[in-house]
Image 1 (cartoon, helix red, strand yellow):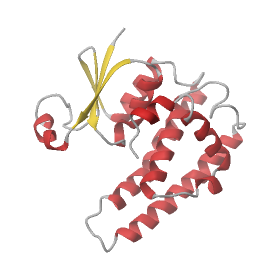
Image 2 (tube, rainbow, N blue to C red; image 1 turned 120 degrees about the horizontal axis):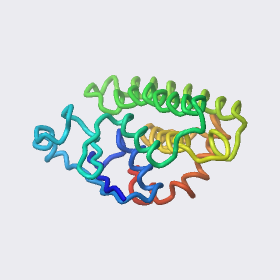
Image 3 (cartoon, rainbow, N blue to C red; image 1 turned 135 degrees about the vertical axis):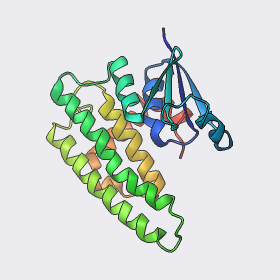
Image 4 (tube, helix red, strand yellow; image 1 turned 60 degrees about the vertical axis):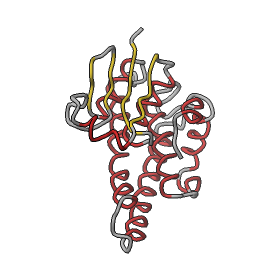
Length: 204
């Protein structure tokens, strides 16, 4: 059985999905939570191909770029869809999440305190827009046990982890009003398939 090491900071960020996959899959893995004070040394150590994390090591072989790692792990642990159409759905959700996450990070890490409330408001509006679109897609696909039907896939991990993280970051408590069906799915998955991940690795 391969041994995995995922190198990233302690927060959720760009390693959250990969951590959730490894946890769900019961993989033999190590969560290397990098301390910020150690990052300058690690950055130049040769570990990181592009001098950024996350980095996934599989029996010593290194993989870079967060979404490439997410998809690599999903394929490894049979979490992709059953055909090209379902794999499109998964990739589409994965990249759509980036669209609003960038706005959230801009708001949260802005150095301009005067502009921060305005940036947070804009980020929240964009997030709510995407929530509505995700809800519609889930309903249009049939509102099954899982996002893509009867099989648990990367789509479920993306929706559960990324929506929970965004709600926590923005202190948004109105998701159920925007996407009630999706929230029901997320609650069920967070308490079952991803229960261990949320208890051990998710950072609020």
